[in-house]
Image (tube, rainbow over all chains, first blue to last red; front, side, top):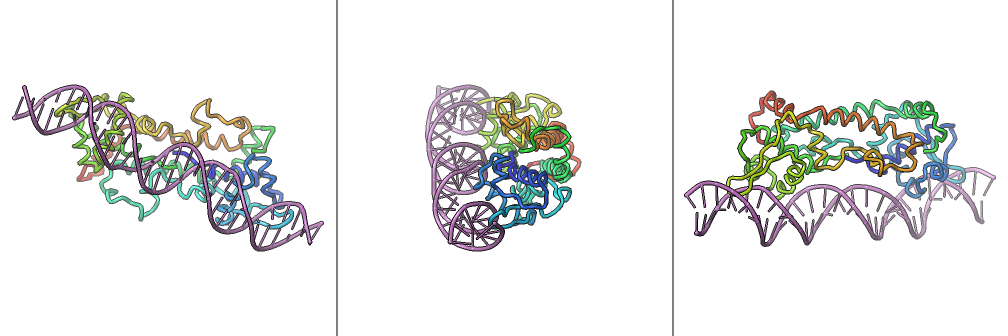
Amino acid sequence: MRISTKGRYALRLMLDLAIHNTGEYISLKDISARQNITVKYLEQIVTGLTRAGFLRSQRGNSGGYRLAKKPADYTVGEILRAMEGSLEPIACLDDEVNQCPRSGECLTLPFWKGLSDVIREYVDGTTLQDLKEQSYETGADNYSI
Amino acid sequence: MRISTKGRYALRLMLDLAIHNTGEYISLKDISARQNITVKYLEQIVTGLTRAGFLRSQRGNSGGYRLAKKPADYTVGEILRAMEGSLEPIACLDDEVNQCPRSGECLTLPFWKGLSDVIREYVDGTTLQDLKEQSYETGADNYSI
DNA sequence: CTAAAATCCTACTATACTGATATGCAATGG
DNA sequence: CCATTGCATATCAGTATAGTAGGATTTTAG
């Protein structure tokens, strides 16, 4: 039941960009320094986020990344799903294809469906903007992580 | 974010025993036939549940397993935890030992804590008895899974 | 008493996933 | 034209997953 580092790092990266949301492009080097994640690993993570249309990128000198939308327009759920593929606790809930032949008579399926629901409600009910505001509220003297 | 087969099968096994809760010992062979899981794999799963004190076992001919307590006295959470080890979405939330050095300044930690909370509330708020009753309600013509 | 049936114990294995690191090409700005 | 940055692909060690296998031990039915 673990979120992978890719999902966790993606959220940190997106929140970093949300906090440093000046309109200018932020290099992975800068994010790497603040987040303590290697540039090479960040590159891998950012690829998924760019493909999902969450980021705009700029190559070359003084290039980097910036958010494509406002922080309030990203749910944490969609960010995590872009990296993890699925947040469902069991494969049967992914789609029709993965449904097991016993789904009609499965006595535990309703329980898993319920778990899926509470997770989805929570992750899709939280936006990057929420995390950003929460950050300022805590009065953390270091917004770098 | 997936529950392993061990966790899922453990829940099916426990629910099977809850439904066939006659006081007599039920053999893995019977459960295997109903649940369509090999006896050998069930043996592995049942070991963890017995060690956790959830089951009473009887060796020898016409031996098997039965619940140690009433179905209402098992939360799904504790069953899953016995197999999965932890249901926390990130290692930092497992215990003090696994806390990362940046936890004090981690801007995403409150979000993960919140996710952990909604998951815990749900899985610990559901008992085997709940699943059993739900099963009868659905009018499923097959209680075998 | 014995054989079958069951739990119990330990080891093994193939596959996939995780968490990276490495190498090099492509584009951009100064 | 060259330093800086993104982009693409490959590689890799370690761990976890989802089982399978073989046999020892215990108990009871016949």
